[in-house]
Amino acid sequence: MRHSKNGAIFVNWGPTMSGGGKDRISVFPSRMAQTVMKARLKGAQKGHSLLKKKADALNLRFREILKKIVENKVLMGEVMKEASFSLAEAKFTAGDFSHTVIQNVSQAQYRVRTKKENVVGVMLPIFDAYADGPDAYDLTGLGKGGANIARLKKNYNKAIELLVELATLQTCFITLDEAIKVTNRRVNAIEHVIIPRIENTLSYIVTELDEMEREEFFRMKKIQANKKKQKEADEVERKKERIARGEEDGEATENRPPPSKNILSNEDDLPVLFT
Image (cartoon, rainbow, N blue to C red; front, side, top):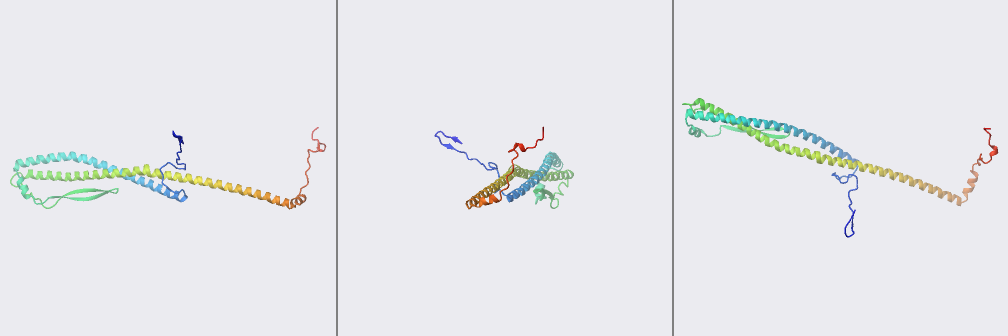
């Protein structure tokens, strides 16, 4: 309650019920609602545990992929360096054979197939490079520099396979990163929003049920007290009616017990116990 400058009184009616002011679900407090909330709390805790395990598994796989990416990038530099040296050697021994390669290009010799790998419910794309069709450059370098050209093809084939593997790792890295973010958001939402809300609702229901039981107990005591007062009042009314009809004096005379003797009224009759 506060007073304004012009004398007006403002009263702040805050939440006075038990559980008021807390973030909880709007339910009517009853035994059925309590059972439903307990089941929902158990399900939320189970879901939180499963999502936590899923996040741990995704983080483990994420760290493994990150380690492989670092290793493959270092290896990729060495393989490309070796392939570049092989190209220089082949050109030195066999001359410029680029026009021969361009003339023989009709379709791609290496193709990529896609597979899916399931990691705790997250589908990761896996790329696999494979050679499709015969080698169109078998006769290249037949006159001179054949060994260097063969070494060149081997090094570049290795570079292509490593490049496809690196593309797989990079794609899995991005996919796992998004999945981990979503999973962590869900874990935090269940842990910090859903479970506290259900617990607050259960606390509110238990408090309201206890208050209802106390109110019921007080109501029953008041009913018993009122019945007792009414019974005494009825008894007094019946006695008054009997007195008014003259029945009370006769019954009192007949049923009156003999007067008891007061031992203190006559001191002479008391026995002397001590002298």
